[in-house]
Length: 227
Image 1 (spheres, rainbow, N blue to C red):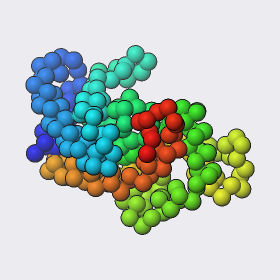
Image 2 (image 1 turned 60 degrees about the vertical axis):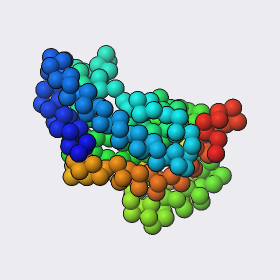
Image 3 (image 1 turned 135 degrees about the vertical axis):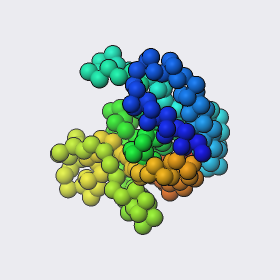
Image 4 (image 1 turned 30 degrees about the vertical axis):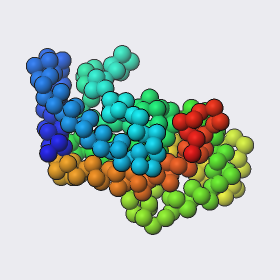
């Protein structure tokens, strides 16, 4: 059961977060990483059924490093206590919308959307909401989607964004600075390995939301986002 191995490794790492421990248990990390790469490959295969571009990605293109960037952080612990992956056209470094998997004992979850996009991208998303807000609302309020993810998440402006009146019919969406939906995963689902099928099921329900954001940020010179 891949998930059990991964969670057990992360529990041990959380209790012994040091380079010395990691060096002495490098084989445990390698095993957990290899298992997660295998599960990521299955997720990519599922996603590629609807977006063939995903077939060109390798699991390592999507998995985040275990090392933390501690250069500017008061927290000097060297390693993340989670393992995660971002499935987007272009891989984990993509600035576009995608699907996110987060594994951490007691804190695992699935998510998707786009987090804190650059100003030009944010402007495009708001423009798409201005033009087609009814499409976004239809996605977010569809019974299956709402039952799975609930309300959209993300930081919001306290006032209306520039160029949009406070009376705009979709001002509640225009105020967002990130556009995220998420769903928790309990340890039992991860431990059993069921999280892979749950991820594919959730990502399929999420797909219209990702497609909307993809459409918003699409440009003629970026084939990765053309639908």
